[in-house]
Length: 168
Image 1 (tube, rainbow, N blue to C red):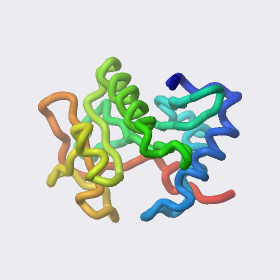
Image 2: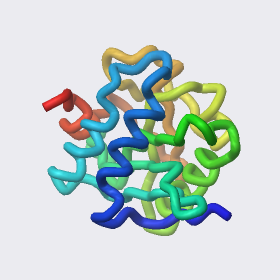
Image 3: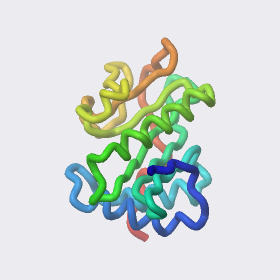
Image 4: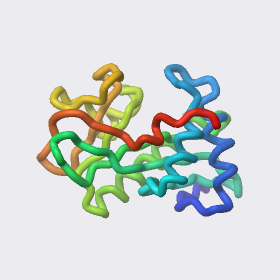
C-alpha cells in the first residue's frame, strides 16, 4: 500500500538520501537535485512537497515551486525534482506522485505547470513543448508545460534560484 502525503520535518534527511540515490545513475543530470530541494525548502519556496511511503519507508518525493513568466502570467509552478527509490522505479510510484501533484495544482486554481524532463514520460500526463515559451539552455523538447486553462504564456520561464544550487 502506497501512502502519499505532505512531507514532515522528520522526512527531510530521508528525502535528501532518496533524491541523491534516485539520480545517481540517471542520464542528463548534474547530480544537484538533493541540493535544489534543500535550497527550495530553506528559501520557503516549496509550494508542495509530497512523499510516497510504502511499508514505513520513503520511496518517492516530488517538489513544486513557483516560476516566473516573463509575460507576467501568474499562478504557474515548476515541478521537480521528482524522485523514486531505484529499487522501486517502474512500479508506478512516480505516476502516482504526478497525479497527486497535478490534482493539488488543479484544486488550488493554478494556471499551469512547467518542467524539464523526458518527453516520453511526461507527455502521458499532458505536458508538451510550447514554441512560444522557453527555458534558456534546455533543448525545447525537454522543456514542457501543462496549462489548466486555454491561456499559455509566451516568453521566458524562470525557475527559482534554488535550481542553481550546488553542493555546500
